[in-house]
Image (tube, rainbow, N blue to C red; front, top):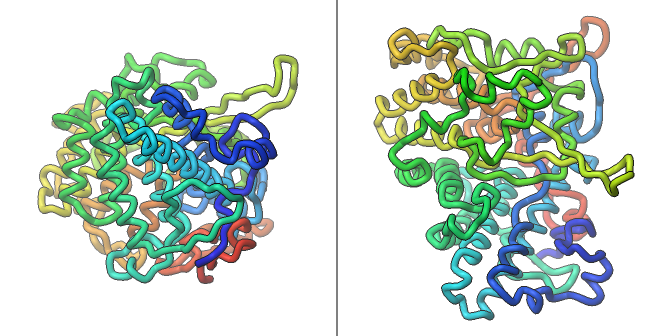
Length: 498
């Protein structure tokens, strides 16, 4: 058993009152959670309110050394796969603390509901708390442990799975194994999902609605390798396989992506609750909306060509993404990461930046569904989903001209690639990952595929003049598991090996 501060920032202690008031006068908030409505309000903070996009994107193969721009440690350290030296916004430690703060909310809510007798009146609140607890632990184990591998999960160190609220600042925990953490995630998720009812939310996309929770289940089982379950939950998330009309309309001339000409307004479209593709949105304290196009390590011209070329190699058609070039053409970006700034007061010139993050989207479900279909032998079904995806990404799409076939996939993505690491991926899987990589550029999702498939990553470092040094993250590099934060180290929790 180990001692650990699961969260140490006063700002993450989940209360609108001050840190000292929470510790000194209100160690148990359940007395105030006297109705289902109050529990629902409390559960609004059961989602990690920190942003992982910055550090996961920067660790992936989506970025390069552009040679100019900011060098904040929250970005430059992940680029070099260094153990983080920061605990501020957009750092791994800030995300760790936010996840455990969210977990603390779920446990307090669940204890309140249990004391009320687990009545029908609290059904949706119980479901939301269980799924939220599962998700926060899922993200922690995915980032801070060796990625799930059924052959080693029973011995790989996981993260503490917390099942009760803290009544003291310091409590003893144990790290558990990745296998145990996955079992507990599955237990909470399977129990909580059927309890959710969308009608209880005024804006369902800000809570665990049924579509989002099923999307989470599909992703969880994809990571676990249970492909039949992926298909089951993806089908529940998008009933009838109605992907086409719900994907982002990048090539739809009537959609906001084409009718809005003011780029500052276009940025706001991506994370709107009215966007059909968004299934779950969470407000995060983050400065990533500035850094993703101002930092030295980002999407430059070389990565633009690699990640989202103007002509799609599979269909041969022009890709419909809107691209913008800034900083003398060195930074390339897709208009999707938007900041809204909350001033400290009406007349203040300082405040807090936030980014709304789409945690689950229709595109994500489609890609996960396609992978699962391929691995269960339904290659035709997987390719059909790729064609559905292309129908919303190719300008002036024509189903005959731009039809994706297995022959085209095998030609564009032959199974001879050795730069993906120790695994030579099937051609169809390479195609799925390529589309997914382009679709989620700037959002940090690529890192999880890098982990799942042990993809080797090479980052360039411009050292002056024309000199370039390459640094490599090999398929089995121990730095793939982010180091536990300083708050855990000081409390004695066992660190990841290096």
